[in-house]
Structure formats: C-alpha cells, structure tokens
Length: 90
Image (cartoon, rainbow, N blue to C red; front, side, top):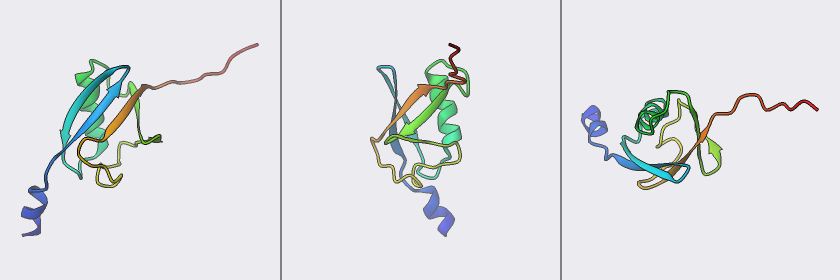
C-alpha cells in the first residue's frame, strides 16, 4: 500500500537556467539529480558532466534529490560550465 502512495506523488517542474537559456524538467521529488543532470545536459546539447549545478548558491550533487533539498514546483537550478584548474603562471 505504501508503494502505491509513493508512485502517486506529484511531479514537480524544475527550471534549469544556463546563460540566458531556461529549460523546464518535470521530475519526481525523490529522483536523484544524476538523472536530472543527464536530461538537462542532453536538452542543452552538452556532453554529460559538462556542467555543475547549484540551487540557492549551494552545489547540487548527483545523489541529492529535490525533496531532500526542500525544492518546490517552479524552483530554479543554475547550470555553470565545470571549470578545472585555474592556476595562473606569473
């Protein structure tokens, strides 16, 4: 019985913003962000692992869930290009 209740949880719409482009993905509150990241990167035409994602200024990890982060319908997740390195030689 609890399995049926879990399956009927409403989906929420998350807005993912990247450089002036915004897409909306419909997700289950208990879906791991790893799957959400893959879908967003595909829709934005990027390779998997291209972006890092933040919510309210905090990095979102692939094992996080919207419910675990207290997200609600219409919340925005920001996407940034993953940057490696950054050292400058003088």
